[in-house]
Length: 190
Image (cartoon, rainbow, N blue to C red):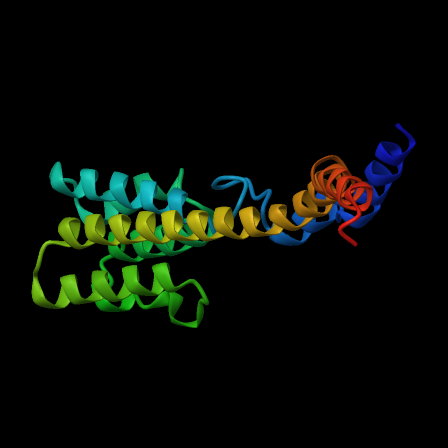
């Protein structure tokens, strides 16, 4: 029983605190009044893109659809959509209205803005491209979740091995070796 307490104390001291590691992952703008709790959530962006595509397919104007979706979109996307909706409603050139996020580090917003500029210049339908981008973002989110799960399984294997290996040796290997050694020594072979 005392060994179990010692191993438990060692495991508690060896494992990093969850709250300190998660505190670094959440961005400082995570509790913005617009959008979900995490600013760079690919699934939230994909859901907003799906809503935008549905609005466009239903026949809404691009400015009205962007304005409607910006109310529930994540913060970086909401800023791009509301700016573009305002400029488009005022009659600005669509290429200029969607030109905002080039300095952004969010690649999804850059791809969306490029797609919207191309759509405005060539006259192609924006809804299909937005749906494809949403599917791509969901795939990236699934890949990232799989990678995190695989990493967690690898990290879990070490402590489990450290806990079960001594027990396996003490309860499985040592009695067998001791029993065989006793029989070999009693038989006089050595």
